Image 1 (cartoon, rainbow, N blue to C red):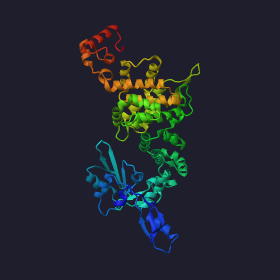
Image 2 (tube, rainbow, N blue to C red):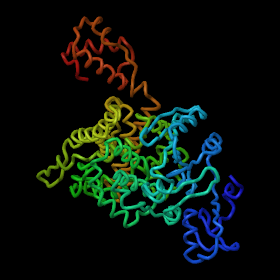
Image 3 (cartoon, helix red, strand yellow):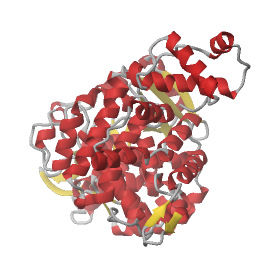
Image 4 (spheres, rainbow, N blue to C red):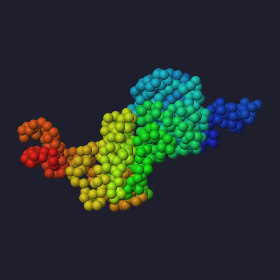
Length: 557
């Protein structure tokens, strides 16, 4: 890479990243490719022969890209394409790399994998696409794809891509840029524009990708592109569940999830993707709810992002302009490291823990329409919406082919999302904190999902009251959250998961009992009373069981 392209501090030419036609040192035309610059020059100065040169753009190539360049054959024609080039122009680090070349994509991928001591996968034999999977120090993976051109030439390949900002190529041999659709101009204007009307019709999953990119980059979707998205929205039904799932969970992992869901709704995607969500629209709720169910749900997604951000490592609670977020950070900030570790432990390598929690948040009130009742006083209630909603959420998760562990986590979160509200209400109204036995039962039923439930309940509270939330109510919930987190991380063996003093075999042998459900009920009653601080030794446990049997109530604690 020459010095001019390697120095990002050097002022850039107004033609940076463009091909220009010069006559006697003066720029007379420009374009995204050498051919475009030449054609533009000939339209006005057809008698003169211009010099076609590339005006360097200032960016630093990431170290991994420099390593890959060193392993490429000298004569290899190859281009970095897609999001990685876009991110270079935005001074962002791209998580993955995509390369386009005339032929032999699989064989080159295999060579690079061997050179990097990485894993190799023949991704698509028909398109001659190979993948290099590089395992990073933190256990995450970087995917490096090598694909042959979609078409006879690089320019045909770029025209066949989704959006102009992704239809830019970087020539690795001389660091020149090929930009036939003016994607760099759209990057500067912060506009997301489809490469053509066929881009979305040919692959409707690009509608979801476009919404995700617009949210992630804070770009505006071009008006014509929005219309093309609407026209192709009903075609997503022909896309595989796996591809739809991957885009949905990337949206849930990214910023402005609520805005993305509003965009999917506006574009007409939701009826063909997650139609059960639409039933929440316009379903009225009684106070303290200030919104109907769908708007409440979107508000919860927004506040959940604030809650998680407010507990990230390095966040300064004293610098926030939001009083509730500041108080939240000050009360719970000591758990930042543990929460970061909680979110880093994903149930699936391809999906983040955060995205799974946002999916559960999206579905936490999905069954309110079916369970709505109005009592004699006119108050609206939704009995068992949490239990029924858990089944709906799990069903949609299975339709997306999530793993069994992920489906179970979503089910547990939705099913139990009302429990902390009862703790908060009791503390605010009666100054009654959760008992040790209640804390034990909460984590017994939720496990690790208990942490997710704590965060969701805080977002749910803010989404319920919005600007009408009082400091007293917020403080009560923060106290409940603190108590639960303290017990989970600081007193686990005392309250959350007390060590077993007896097992079933010992119990049957000591008390001459027969196998059956009563054994499990007795053992659970022992553990509950351990958590409550009433049983500390094996002898106390046996005495407790004998007394219960004498009363004839093995499962009642």
